[in-house]
Image: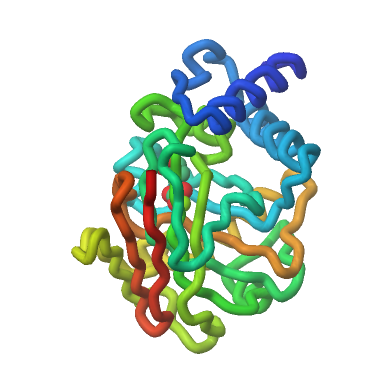
Length: 263
Ligand code: OOG
Ligand code: MG
Protein backbone atom coordinates (compact mmCIF):
# COMPACT_ATOMS: atom_id res chain seq x y z
CA UNK A 1 0.00 0.00 0.00
CA UNK A 2 1.32 3.44 -0.91
CA UNK A 3 -1.52 5.63 0.32
CA UNK A 4 -2.15 6.37 3.98
CA UNK A 5 -5.47 5.69 5.68
CA UNK A 6 -6.55 9.35 5.60
CA UNK A 7 -6.07 9.48 1.81
CA UNK A 8 -8.01 6.22 1.32
CA UNK A 9 -10.90 7.65 3.35
CA UNK A 10 -10.75 10.97 1.50
CA UNK A 11 -10.84 9.31 -1.94
CA UNK A 12 -13.67 6.95 -0.94
CA UNK A 13 -15.74 9.88 0.29
CA UNK A 14 -14.96 11.85 -2.87
CA UNK A 15 -16.03 9.03 -5.23
CA UNK A 16 -19.14 8.25 -3.21
CA UNK A 17 -20.15 11.92 -3.14
CA UNK A 18 -19.81 11.95 -6.94
CA UNK A 19 -22.18 8.95 -7.10
CA UNK A 20 -24.69 10.60 -4.74
CA UNK A 21 -24.62 13.97 -6.53
CA UNK A 22 -24.42 12.45 -10.04
CA UNK A 23 -21.34 14.48 -10.96
CA UNK A 24 -18.15 13.36 -12.59
CA UNK A 25 -14.51 13.77 -11.63
CA UNK A 26 -11.08 13.17 -13.11
CA UNK A 27 -9.48 9.78 -12.55
CA UNK A 28 -7.85 9.65 -9.15
CA UNK A 29 -4.51 8.25 -10.37
CA UNK A 30 -3.86 11.68 -11.94
CA UNK A 31 -3.41 13.04 -8.44
CA UNK A 32 -2.14 9.84 -6.83
CA UNK A 33 0.04 8.14 -9.47
CA UNK A 34 1.65 5.90 -6.82
CA UNK A 35 -1.65 4.29 -5.90
CA UNK A 36 -1.30 0.47 -6.07
CA UNK A 37 -3.81 -2.41 -6.40
CA UNK A 38 -4.23 -2.77 -2.65
CA UNK A 39 -4.92 0.95 -2.35
CA UNK A 40 -7.52 0.71 -5.13
CA UNK A 41 -9.38 -2.16 -3.45
CA UNK A 42 -9.00 -0.45 -0.04
CA UNK A 43 -10.82 2.60 -1.43
CA UNK A 44 -13.57 0.33 -2.82
CA UNK A 45 -13.79 -1.44 0.59
CA UNK A 46 -14.14 1.90 2.33
CA UNK A 47 -16.99 2.87 -0.04
CA UNK A 48 -18.65 -0.43 0.83
CA UNK A 49 -18.13 0.17 4.56
CA UNK A 50 -19.70 3.63 4.29
CA UNK A 51 -22.78 2.26 2.50
CA UNK A 52 -23.24 -0.57 5.02
CA UNK A 53 -22.84 1.90 7.90
CA UNK A 54 -25.68 3.92 6.34
CA UNK A 55 -27.91 0.82 6.26
CA UNK A 56 -27.33 -0.54 2.75
CA UNK A 57 -27.14 -4.30 2.35
CA UNK A 58 -24.56 -5.97 0.12
CA UNK A 59 -26.55 -8.35 -2.10
CA UNK A 60 -23.72 -9.69 -4.21
CA UNK A 61 -20.65 -9.10 -6.31
CA UNK A 62 -19.67 -8.40 -9.89
CA UNK A 63 -16.86 -9.15 -12.26
CA UNK A 64 -16.13 -6.56 -14.93
CA UNK A 65 -13.94 -6.19 -18.00
CA UNK A 66 -14.18 -9.95 -18.52
CA UNK A 67 -14.80 -9.90 -22.30
CA UNK A 68 -12.47 -8.71 -25.08
CA UNK A 69 -15.22 -6.38 -26.30
CA UNK A 70 -15.29 -4.61 -22.93
CA UNK A 71 -11.50 -4.64 -22.45
CA UNK A 72 -11.03 -3.13 -25.89
CA UNK A 73 -13.75 -0.53 -25.35
CA UNK A 74 -12.19 0.60 -22.06
CA UNK A 75 -8.53 0.11 -23.01
CA UNK A 76 -7.60 -2.31 -20.21
CA UNK A 77 -6.42 -5.93 -20.17
CA UNK A 78 -7.44 -7.38 -16.83
CA UNK A 79 -10.79 -8.08 -15.19
CA UNK A 80 -11.82 -6.19 -12.08
CA UNK A 81 -14.23 -6.92 -9.25
CA UNK A 82 -16.81 -4.96 -7.29
CA UNK A 83 -19.82 -5.29 -5.01
CA UNK A 84 -23.57 -4.88 -5.50
CA UNK A 85 -25.69 -2.97 -2.96
CA UNK A 86 -29.43 -3.48 -2.43
CA UNK A 87 -30.44 -0.10 -3.86
CA UNK A 88 -28.73 -0.88 -7.20
CA UNK A 89 -31.56 -3.30 -7.97
CA UNK A 90 -34.28 -2.14 -10.39
CA UNK A 91 -37.42 -4.30 -10.59
CA UNK A 92 -37.94 -6.27 -13.79
CA UNK A 93 -39.61 -3.95 -16.33
CA UNK A 94 -39.11 -1.08 -13.91
CA UNK A 95 -37.64 2.35 -14.37
CA UNK A 96 -34.18 3.71 -13.87
CA UNK A 97 -33.98 7.48 -13.36
CA UNK A 98 -31.20 9.04 -15.39
CA UNK A 99 -31.29 12.25 -13.34
CA UNK A 100 -29.72 10.19 -10.54
CA UNK A 101 -26.89 9.13 -12.87
CA UNK A 102 -24.03 10.77 -14.78
CA UNK A 103 -23.77 9.02 -18.19
CA UNK A 104 -25.30 5.54 -17.91
CA UNK A 105 -24.52 2.62 -20.23
CA UNK A 106 -26.04 -0.85 -20.26
CA UNK A 107 -24.37 -4.24 -20.57
CA UNK A 108 -25.82 -7.69 -21.31
CA UNK A 109 -24.72 -10.15 -18.64
CA UNK A 110 -25.39 -13.59 -17.24
CA UNK A 111 -26.37 -13.35 -13.56
CA UNK A 112 -25.62 -16.19 -11.14
CA UNK A 113 -27.33 -16.87 -7.79
CA UNK A 114 -25.45 -19.02 -5.26
CA UNK A 115 -27.09 -21.81 -3.27
CA UNK A 116 -24.05 -22.49 -1.10
CA UNK A 117 -21.09 -20.46 0.04
CA UNK A 118 -18.39 -20.01 -2.62
CA UNK A 119 -14.84 -19.68 -1.41
CA UNK A 120 -11.30 -19.96 -2.69
CA UNK A 121 -8.45 -20.34 -3.10
CA UNK A 122 -8.45 -22.92 -5.86
CA UNK A 123 -11.97 -22.15 -7.04
CA UNK A 124 -12.56 -23.30 -10.65
CA UNK A 125 -15.51 -23.59 -13.03
CA UNK A 126 -16.53 -26.89 -11.42
CA UNK A 127 -16.63 -25.38 -7.92
CA UNK A 128 -18.72 -22.52 -9.26
CA UNK A 129 -21.24 -24.69 -11.11
CA UNK A 130 -21.67 -26.92 -8.02
CA UNK A 131 -22.48 -23.88 -5.87
CA UNK A 132 -24.92 -22.15 -8.24
CA UNK A 133 -28.66 -22.36 -7.69
CA UNK A 134 -29.62 -20.85 -11.06
CA UNK A 135 -28.57 -18.38 -13.74
CA UNK A 136 -30.71 -15.70 -15.39
CA UNK A 137 -30.45 -12.75 -17.75
CA UNK A 138 -29.15 -9.53 -16.21
CA UNK A 139 -28.63 -6.00 -17.50
CA UNK A 140 -26.02 -4.03 -15.66
CA UNK A 141 -26.20 -0.23 -15.75
CA UNK A 142 -22.70 1.18 -15.33
CA UNK A 143 -22.01 4.84 -14.61
CA UNK A 144 -18.32 5.57 -14.16
CA UNK A 145 -17.77 8.51 -11.88
CA UNK A 146 -14.88 9.48 -14.18
CA UNK A 147 -15.34 12.08 -16.88
CA UNK A 148 -16.20 10.53 -20.26
CA UNK A 149 -15.61 7.02 -18.82
CA UNK A 150 -11.85 7.73 -19.07
CA UNK A 151 -9.97 5.71 -16.46
CA UNK A 152 -7.25 3.18 -15.80
CA UNK A 153 -7.80 -0.10 -14.01
CA UNK A 154 -6.80 1.14 -10.55
CA UNK A 155 -9.10 4.15 -10.77
CA UNK A 156 -12.06 2.04 -11.89
CA UNK A 157 -11.48 -0.51 -9.11
CA UNK A 158 -11.51 2.28 -6.53
CA UNK A 159 -14.79 3.47 -8.09
CA UNK A 160 -16.42 0.07 -7.42
CA UNK A 161 -16.04 -0.79 -11.13
CA UNK A 162 -18.63 1.81 -12.23
CA UNK A 163 -21.45 -0.17 -10.53
CA UNK A 164 -24.72 1.71 -10.09
CA UNK A 165 -27.88 -0.26 -11.07
CA UNK A 166 -28.92 -3.65 -12.43
CA UNK A 167 -32.01 -5.60 -13.35
CA UNK A 168 -32.27 -9.39 -13.33
CA UNK A 169 -35.17 -11.62 -14.26
CA UNK A 170 -36.46 -13.61 -17.19
CA UNK A 171 -36.50 -17.37 -16.73
CA UNK A 172 -34.10 -18.67 -14.09
CA UNK A 173 -32.40 -21.83 -15.35
CA UNK A 174 -30.32 -24.50 -13.59
CA UNK A 175 -26.72 -24.52 -14.82
CA UNK A 176 -27.08 -28.14 -15.96
CA UNK A 177 -29.84 -27.08 -18.35
CA UNK A 178 -27.75 -24.66 -20.39
CA UNK A 179 -24.35 -24.51 -22.10
CA UNK A 180 -23.16 -21.13 -20.86
CA UNK A 181 -20.49 -20.97 -23.59
CA UNK A 182 -22.82 -21.17 -26.56
CA UNK A 183 -25.86 -19.46 -25.06
CA UNK A 184 -26.82 -16.54 -27.32
CA UNK A 185 -27.69 -13.05 -26.11
CA UNK A 186 -29.40 -10.17 -27.90
CA UNK A 187 -29.57 -6.69 -26.40
CA UNK A 188 -32.31 -4.46 -27.79
CA UNK A 189 -32.66 -0.71 -27.36
CA UNK A 190 -36.03 0.79 -28.23
CA UNK A 191 -36.95 -2.43 -30.04
CA UNK A 192 -33.82 -2.51 -32.22
CA UNK A 193 -31.17 -5.19 -31.69
CA UNK A 194 -27.97 -3.27 -30.82
CA UNK A 195 -25.53 -5.87 -29.47
CA UNK A 196 -25.18 -9.63 -29.84
CA UNK A 197 -22.95 -12.26 -28.36
CA UNK A 198 -22.51 -15.66 -26.76
CA UNK A 199 -21.53 -16.58 -23.22
CA UNK A 200 -18.03 -17.65 -24.24
CA UNK A 201 -17.15 -13.99 -24.86
CA UNK A 202 -16.66 -13.85 -21.09
CA UNK A 203 -13.32 -15.59 -20.46
CA UNK A 204 -14.39 -18.62 -22.50
CA UNK A 205 -17.14 -19.42 -19.96
CA UNK A 206 -18.93 -16.94 -17.67
CA UNK A 207 -18.36 -19.27 -14.68
CA UNK A 208 -14.61 -18.68 -15.18
CA UNK A 209 -15.21 -15.02 -14.30
CA UNK A 210 -17.00 -16.10 -11.11
CA UNK A 211 -14.06 -18.40 -10.21
CA UNK A 212 -11.63 -15.49 -10.68
CA UNK A 213 -13.82 -13.31 -8.47
CA UNK A 214 -13.95 -15.99 -5.76
CA UNK A 215 -10.16 -16.44 -5.80
CA UNK A 216 -9.70 -12.68 -5.70
CA UNK A 217 -11.96 -12.46 -2.63
CA UNK A 218 -10.18 -15.41 -0.99
CA UNK A 219 -6.86 -13.58 -1.26
CA UNK A 220 -8.52 -10.82 0.76
CA UNK A 221 -10.03 -13.20 3.34
CA UNK A 222 -13.57 -12.99 1.95
CA UNK A 223 -16.10 -15.47 0.59
CA UNK A 224 -19.42 -15.22 -1.25
CA UNK A 225 -22.39 -16.19 0.95
CA UNK A 226 -25.24 -18.45 -0.20
CA UNK A 227 -28.07 -16.52 -1.81
CA UNK A 228 -25.77 -13.92 -3.38
CA UNK A 229 -26.21 -12.44 -6.82
CA UNK A 230 -23.15 -12.31 -9.07
CA UNK A 231 -22.87 -10.47 -12.38
CA UNK A 232 -20.27 -12.17 -14.56
CA UNK A 233 -19.41 -9.22 -16.83
CA UNK A 234 -20.59 -7.57 -20.02
CA UNK A 235 -20.64 -9.95 -22.99
CA UNK A 236 -20.55 -7.10 -25.54
CA UNK A 237 -19.54 -3.46 -25.53
CA UNK A 238 -21.62 -1.28 -23.24
CA UNK A 239 -24.36 0.79 -24.93
CA UNK A 240 -25.15 4.38 -23.87
CA UNK A 241 -28.74 5.14 -22.80
CA UNK A 242 -30.73 8.30 -22.10
CA UNK A 243 -34.15 9.26 -20.74
CA UNK A 244 -36.89 7.78 -22.91
CA UNK A 245 -34.94 4.68 -23.88
CA UNK A 246 -36.04 1.17 -23.03
CA UNK A 247 -33.76 -1.85 -23.15
CA UNK A 248 -34.47 -5.55 -23.29
CA UNK A 249 -32.04 -8.45 -23.02
CA UNK A 250 -32.99 -11.81 -24.53
CA UNK A 251 -30.93 -14.81 -23.53
CA UNK A 252 -31.42 -18.10 -25.32
CA UNK A 253 -33.65 -20.39 -23.24
CA UNK A 254 -33.81 -17.85 -20.40
CA UNK A 255 -36.48 -15.45 -21.61
CA UNK A 256 -35.92 -11.73 -21.42
CA UNK A 257 -35.52 -8.93 -18.94
CA UNK A 258 -35.88 -5.21 -19.45
CA UNK A 259 -36.01 -1.76 -17.95
CA UNK A 260 -36.97 1.80 -18.94
CA UNK A 261 -34.94 4.97 -18.51
CA UNK A 262 -36.84 8.03 -17.33
CA UNK A 263 -35.78 11.57 -16.53
C1 OOG B 1 -16.09 -0.83 -15.80
C2 OOG B 1 -17.10 -1.86 -15.43
C3 OOG B 1 -17.14 -3.00 -16.42
C4 OOG B 1 -18.29 -5.11 -17.16
O1 OOG B 1 -19.26 -5.86 -17.09
O2 OOG B 1 -17.37 -5.28 -17.96
C5 OOG B 1 -18.24 -3.97 -16.21
C6 OOG B 1 -16.55 0.07 -16.91
O3 OOG B 1 -16.52 -0.33 -18.08
O4 OOG B 1 -16.94 1.22 -16.62
O5 OOG B 1 -19.11 -3.88 -15.38
MG1 MG C 1 -20.80 -5.17 -15.92
